[in-house]
Image (cartoon, rainbow over all chains, first blue to last red; front, side, top):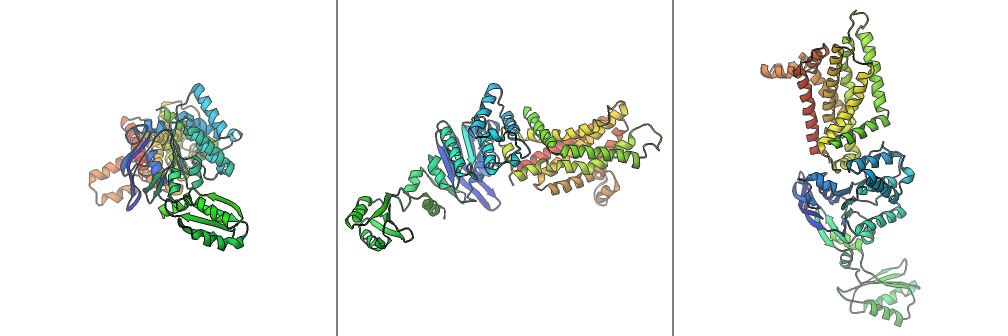
Length: 307
Length: 234
């Protein structure tokens, strides 16, 4: 369990993190979202024991990071922002160094090292120095370092930054595979990542928690929640169908994009408009390329909350 | 304490993975011997001792050690690897000590290179030289922890080492004589590296000199820890 209690960090007059309290339980994958400079990294650094909070406290598996730092850090796997490591070491040396610090010995050491090398596809670069590796490989070395001791708690600061789409997919699959019995906190500004791996999302803005919900719950706050979006075969029919749909009682607003002949109908709060809208389209003889119900747009929610 | 050993080994491996340690050892040996024979008049003085060799060590250390120690923490902070290190289950003091001991190793190698120190006076002088180097290194380590800029760390290191080296000489003492009480000036003078080093170099191992170096090293390592605690995340 991760617990933060009124965590606050001030730098002079600037309050980087302001009274942040939350708990994460096993099985949860918490996405930590927010604009750049919102305080995500500072919060993670305080939980990981790298920065001392101005006030408040954080604990990992019941060990307070200030009073029992070694026990707390032993239970934690941490990927710092930018995945820093020692450039002059080879991947093999680096992982052995971390395994030493994590007091891994004997058969378990062999097994864990083999596990991370295999899962993060590091076999081909084991004897290369880290400074010669691409950004994606460095990130994977950082991840390997974070999970080599199989910690119950993982804090990953932008784990997929700089990876290509295939690598992103693999890292997300790895996180999903570990999610069942671990506590995982990831920070990201990729909203698709929240949908892909997180069971819960906290949005932080100017150092404060402004939303704490499931990804579906967040999406439901969107104006586009339950909106109906369609694409017409004939762009010339846009004006006609727009007028017909706008006249429906439960439709709050209609947005039209001329470029791709797309029309989006936004419902009044809590209303369901899909049956009515599709009936209008069918009755008016409008030919549709596609029609779908939107669950809500996270990016729009994100902008509204953090603006 | 096993973490001290792990960090020490990692640091050592990195010195020898890059040309750093080799360049240091080579330059130190070439300069130490050149000074001994040319400036020290090793043959001309007609005495079978190593005084000319040892008396130049402080001046070599003055520039070479800050050059060696400047990256110690400044580089970790610049590259961000300090965040990785400090979030492992490692105590800060273990990291400070491990890095310090690793850095003394190339010096230890260098000092021992010329052959087995085989008589008492020379053994004492080697010990003195090593203690002196340790003092310089501890100061350099502290200066490196104060900044993430290696050049600044180097210059701070040279200046601080220079001040300690000449603490017993008018250059430094005159700064205090005009306004500070005599006892204070005497205290500054007693901090001089050279005074303590020279007595060991002559073969006199006084407990006070040993204590002086031990406490100086401990003080600056402690100061390194405090500086890191305060500034590691900047």
